[in-house]
Amino acid sequence: MIDLRSLFPDELQAALAPLHLPAYRSKQIFDWLQRRGAQSAGEMTNLPKELRERLTAEFFISSCEIVRKQVSAGGARKYLFQLHDGQAIESVVMRYSYGYSVCVSTQAGCKMACAFCASGQQGFTRDLTSGEMLAQIHAAQKDLGEPISHVVLMGMGEPLDNYENSVKFLRLASHPEGLHIGQRKISISTCGLVPQIGRLAGERLGVTLSVSLHAPNDALRNQLMPVNKAYPIGALLAACGRYAKAAGRRVSFEYALFRDVNDSPAHARELASKLKGLLCHVNLIPANPVPELGFARSKPEQIRAFQEILEQSGLAVTVRRSLGGDIDAACGQLRYQTLDVRY
Ligand code: SAH
Image (cartoon, rainbow, N blue to C red; front, side, top):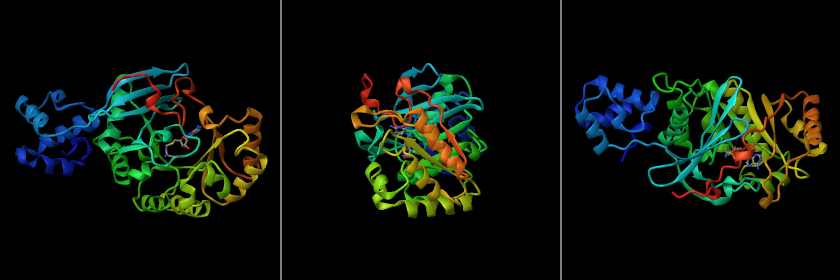
């Protein structure tokens, strides 16, 4: 069945054509699905009862049911959502000075198998639809009672491995008659699927591309991120340069610092030389320890030294504030199987 929340206005109108509705009805339904975030047709109170019943009986509307919520001391919230087929996914909401940002999952599980990522350990189950990505924002917003202003596609999954749905999500989330989240307030994060980065550059979207780099050379990156064997750093950085030019926006490189793995001054110098001349920004992430995978967080002085070397070579660098570590809501920590819940 078609997911009504995954449709653009013209597609929605076409899907509803068999009901022979006046044109304004499909506008109302789009408003409920996209802007007001109705979970079901039953909530669409300005539609005749008979129409609500037909929508319920004959169409599908994706939604996220909150199974569990955890609130961290720092104010981050992690939601465990259940989808219509019983799949569980997670989203995290963080509060910043500029508003609330939500970290949205794009797949149940992930195929990429990065060595340090807890989310990748459980394998891949399925892609999420764009409606299911939007439903995460609506459910979180409703629970929070406040609007969410920023979105990062950095939850579970690899967005560019679910390309069509992720791009449709970007367009629907920024649609003026929907959530209307400016594309500049949306980031899409990838482990580095080079062909899809090229394709994304051609979409003419204003979203920020984040690339999870985590290593300055192929030997190390091959060990940490298997995807690098298919798309090595040289090809990846060339694709990033083309994206930056096409989008007119800096690419953001994520670099998680793992103790004694990728955090030496030599690594920093090598990284600086690779990124020279690229329109970019480096976001250093104090890694989230995954002891069972053998990764620890770099020491603060190591992180500072790494940052200084990059800055001295003229790169724009920030160190990510660590939020949500106490509820396993930190980067790469989303793994619903460890939660003691029944689905
Ligand atoms: N697949 C996409 C988006 C999801 S991962 C990507 O790879 O970018 C979100 C971010 O968390 C990525 O940058 C990922 O590399 C990072 N991450 C995974 N495990 C981590 C860990 N243990 N510590 C810090 N960051 C981690």
